[in-house]
Amino acid sequence: MLCVLLLVGLVALPTQGIASARPATEGGGSGAAPETFVALDEIDPTILHDIRYTTQHNFVGRRIHAYRDPICVLTRPAAEALAEAQTAVRDLGYSLKVYDCYRPQTAVDDFVAWAKRLNDNRMKAEFYPDVDKSQLFADGYIASLSGHSRGSTVDLTLVRLPAAQQPRWRPSMGLVPCFAPYGEQFPDNTVDMGTGYDCFDTLSNTLDPRIRGEARANRLLLKDVLESAGFTNYAKEWWHYTLDGEPFPDTYFDFPVARRALR
Image (cartoon, rainbow, N blue to C red; front, side, top):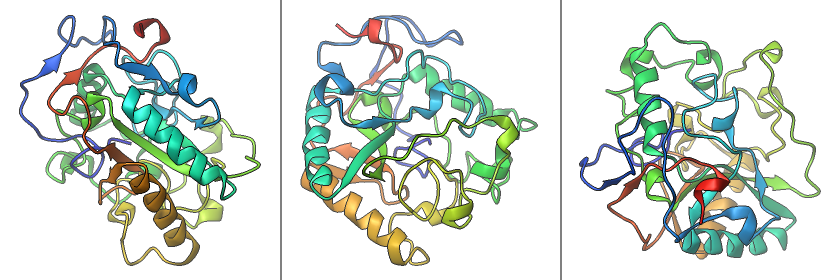
């Protein structure tokens, strides 16, 4: 979902350091990525992808601006560290699955504009059933900058191998609260993590004491493996990890999520 410093991944940081070929526009980011950025599937093709912001199945309910291809783009150090984590979880019978990686500033601006449209609640029943949309900024779920835009942050989960087929969400399937019991949540082939991805709720806090049993064990497994590979978890989102020593700690990029943007 949104992930960064505040609960859903967008962080309130100074606006200096935004790197873009031109200002972010509604049509999407433009320009080319620095050579440091790569597509994750070129580093490790075994890591599963479910890039939610290229689909309708996210808290906005449509494709997000500047997400053009369903790929995970990261800085090379982050991608290589994630490949190391994949080796570790595959030895245990799992695969990593990524939901979101690099996020253009244009997409962040799209989230901010959506949050200001208070009458657009088409996905509320799943992603923020207990949060009033008018409180998204005050509660820290939406902010003007995201660590994802620096290129070394990833949202991800675990899938038991052999991986079950990844279902495609359709509006006719309806919406179920993201904190519903595991068997009632959208069946996205992940293991039980206590909540679904991008769940605007304190139950998404990685170590929330209400999350017990198998779900807690799965969260801790993901945390242990990612930390061993050099990532740090954001405590308010079980799915959100940032590479330690990220190469662009103060720069926010705005090229699109697209293969053609990569050199």
